[in-house]
Image (cartoon, rainbow, N blue to C red; front, side, top):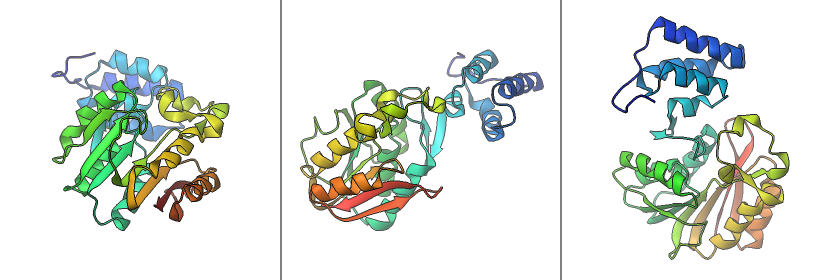
Length: 263
């Protein structure tokens, strides 16, 4: 690893090395990722050898670069947090377009902090809290908190375990991939704790929906991201726990990606 103050000096030989490694790993199937990597090479504090090793190890390009754009920000990421994805941006858009103001916001399982930090920009007078059970994830979120003047309050909590107040808005992108189908090789460099859940991917979603009613103000909103095949189960849990005005919305690719409801 190069020192933080040192950036990689790029020449044609370096680019050819990286292209060859990329081609041996992906062939012609992922040229977009190669273009992203080459574009960001001048800002990467790694040697060419380290970059090549990470390509061979099938490390995601976002982690090789070390940061990734999300909504109106750019977020430091590593193997301790999920890579911010455009599917989640759709949920942010819906919140912006439907909730005009908030006093208190809670992001459960914040990871890199991207959801909470973007909401802190959107609602500059709100008090935004963000929790994660992972200390390593919170360290990443702290690095990203600099980009908002409305600093997010970050602290460790296993979902609601250390929460002591009520909120106008609770939002979460929890683990929802079923352990039984944990075979996606593209996810091997992201933290299992943030990806996989028991009970066919529903255990954490079930817990959050069941507890959220105790931490929401009356007429407060719960937004939760989930798998495309989990809509019916999520809506059933919301109804069972006293939520109303329940809706599910699709992401950019037309998959049912998040549900929201009012208490």
